Image 1: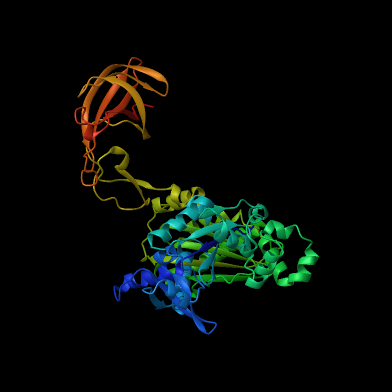
Image 2: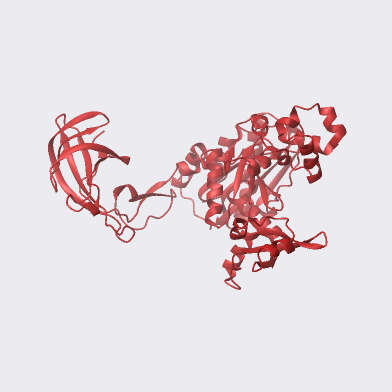
Length: 503
């Protein structure tokens, strides 16, 4: 079953302009507030407004003359629709290489992504949406995203749902669409206004009407939009093409649907692609396997490699792990294996002891568990223990070294849990503490080990005094007191359990 992700960039013209101005550093960002204007109906109207202009009540579609009457000092710039469209296409190609093999433009400010074959690489559909929106936010682009079984439902929910990211479970899109306004169906303005005059405000109101009466009054276009959103009619999407030089296609004389046939297609496609990669001195970092169904839809799976590879057996094994979940529909009539992301890989001498390396092991684990589930730990310069370790790509070169510390617990409690403790200030260990409702009497203790906070970000200079304590049953704990025990500016003198020694 297809799972379509609709990405909406509500402030795309303004944010695209600001990004372009930042990259060129000239002529600089427009002064706030400002609007972008276009020619429409023999006058100039607002195409988009900056954040400050929106706060002042300016809306897209308003005549410029009316807006200037309210705000005489408003800065005005022409709207460049062609630049917006070109930038949206570039963003689509960027997403195709990093998020999903199937990306379609949804102009003027949106895109569609097929998530069924790619969401596992991000730890699931919800994580995929969160990752996508967060990446765009780091680039200065505000975004909303929704994922559903149909393009119409995803498009409507991305624009009208309350949450900025929303995943609709399979087959649940009719219930999710019901409370949305009828404008969410991408209707012409006159149709939406006509429905409003009849008191039909939501899609649920529309579904309650007899289908025949809807068709007689508003025509077939409204019914087509409704059927497409509900999954009762198809909606073709024009997915962006893959580079021809790094893709191989295998048309079939007879459609196939058996799992064994799909595995056989992999065994035929991978050697052909590896041959192309070898000719260019490249190795695959990401592979997209696209199955074209008889009904014109496409089923896709995506996998990646931790290091460039053109080993036929290794790449085929990765794809074999994923192809069992592909729905062939009424049959597969063609298959394409594309490499949207490749890297230089010079020829290597294979010795008699050559075998699967660490990179191949990482790739197999990532294919089974998800791309984000395989990583290594790297040290980070930080004041407190919970921030001193970060995750890194599994084959990344780790710079720096692990600091030499006093004995550390085998398990950290994250976040540290507050405990009730009895201790003499300023530097004595606790004689008793209560953790999770259980009382522990301290038999032996070592400390304190003082850790200072990041003084360059915390002017008050937070302090922690750590103690290793052992209770009467022999269990050992890592406790700390906030503050130095004398100056309240260094902490509130509360006690916390941060780690456990032993199993």
